[in-house]
Structure formats: C-alpha cells, structure tokens
Image (cartoon, rainbow, N blue to C red; front, side, top):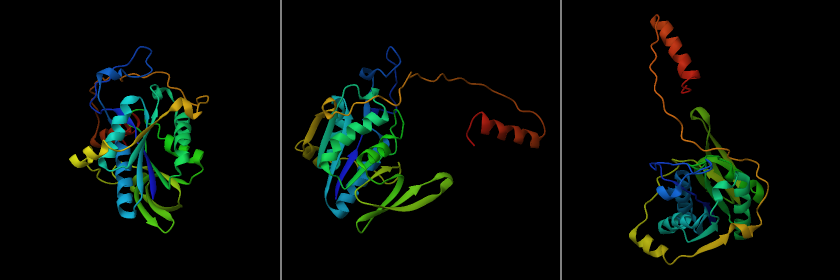
Length: 256
C-alpha cells in the first residue's frame, strides 16, 4: 500500500507568540517549531499500516525551508521518502489554495491512501484534507479513530459528538483525516535518525504547480486575546444559585 501523509510544521505549543506589523502573521525568528500534533498521529497510523500490509510511506509538507525538519523527523520515524512543497509565504494561503497545491503535487504519485491530521494547531481550519479529497476525486472520511483493511477497501471508526462513534466503509484509493489519540506516536530511534540522512526529500516550488487562484477566505487580523479576571457572587436559595450558575456556565462561560 502506497501511503502519503501530509504533515505541517507549526509554532511550538509553549512558544511566546509576537505579532508582526500589520497583524497578518507571527514573528517566526523568536520561536521554535514542531510537527502538528494531529499530523503526528496520522504519520504513526501510516507507519503501522505499512508495517502490517507492506508498501511505502511518503511524508509531504508545505512551507518555507525550515519545514524540511518536519519531513526529516518523519523519515527518522520510518517514512521512506519526503516531498517538500516550498513556499516561504504559505501562511497567506487559504485552505482551498493549499489543497489545490497539494493536489497538484500529489496527483502524479497515485497514492492508495492519503492521511492528514484533522486540523492544524496554528490556523485550525480543518478544511484542507476534505478539499484535497474532492480535488483528487477520492472518497474520504473524517475524525478517524481506527482503520482496518478489509479486502480492497477500509473499515473505519469515526468519532461523533457526545461520545458516539460510527463505523463506515470506503473503497481505495481514499483520503482520511485522523483524530488525535488514535494511537501512540513513536519516537525516532538513533538508527532511524542516521538512516534519514540517506533518504530522498524532493523539493517542488509551489509557484511551479500552477495552483494559484482567487482566495475564498482571508485572515484579516491575528491578535493575542486579552486576559481578564472577574469575581461574581451569586445569591439566593441553593436552588436559585444552582439555576443561575448553570445559566452562566452555559451562556457566558460556554462550557456546558
């Protein structure tokens, strides 16, 4: 089975973010980067499928030169080769243009299965995977929590709301978006790190893919939310206090 995995490099979770002038992106020189969490689970699932059924795992990432580090980490964990779609200003792309770029880069590969994380930790659109499936004309399923190969297709466990799950079947070739927690991602071994240095990473300039187009979405402003604290006392009988508290948790705090 030939599997492609889309992985994204995102700001580290503990990075102190600073906004550039114009409020369109963050100041990258001051922070560290890491592999998007959901994509790490997608990579691990691809490696497990390859180990069980044979084939090849190819790691694909789009971004500036630093994004190659994410591909190298995937190669160290067991992916056979990588594809880097080079674009220094990838953060300006909307999900559709990103999906068009990935589609143009991946279509010649004829993957049996393409995996992506459910969404990215930075922009969190959660749209690129399903748009990519549509552009490639492939069946897809989202929020995947388990994958079983059945004949010439896949049996999948999808996470729904309120603790419910759904089993569906899709034929191959297909595209799946993977939910965090589907497995336990492995660490790269020393041998894997050394082997990764010998593996191929093919670079493709995004501008050469002919995947431009008018954006359907645009980020107007990025900002750091202002934190504030407030103490409020609720008075009344226990029954009245409980009713008021539930109302505030539901409509103000939005945790219910």
